[in-house]
Length: 241
Image 1 (cartoon, rainbow, N blue to C red):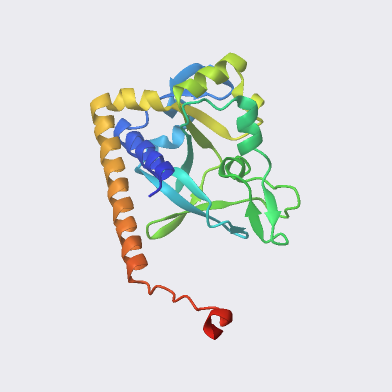
Image 2 (image 1 turned 60 degrees about the vertical axis):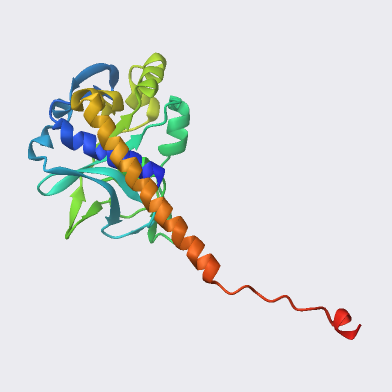
């Protein structure tokens, strides 16, 4: 589990522990408006759990193996995708749009889907340039594959929300997104769960990451020590001397 996956796992845990329905969220069309997440996503009534680092596949196209949902809110017969961008430096709106929300592209002679995950999510259920059919994403959950809903959720740090709100109220238009349903602030999740509990969850995830890292490093050292040292062949010149 890499550092960014620790962040994804933390968001998933906080979402589960928050209960989701009463989590404060910001409407993308007016980021200054704060409402309950359930008001923006009525389907949360069927909420079961939240999975992190969930792999994607598409009905007719190959999807790059690196493409995963940061988190998936699991419902009975579908999931709501969640993307977490937690950098505290606060990505400017224009930079976020350029980096994450360009239109996905067909690659490998039209057989594969490429692009950032937010861009692919924002075109889920729609036809992209050069495509013949609508993108239909599925998430690979333990023991089953399930439909990914077109609406998606973005989790950001409060510093990012504040920076965006100073630039534009209608963040959806500024980003050029059509399917972003809600923006959730990480600090709001921490507040609902409680700082002590949230800190404990983060510490356990980080400790687990460090233990796996140490184990992998020790195994790497063992393999390196066990590998035979290549012998250095003397040059033909030295052999003749």
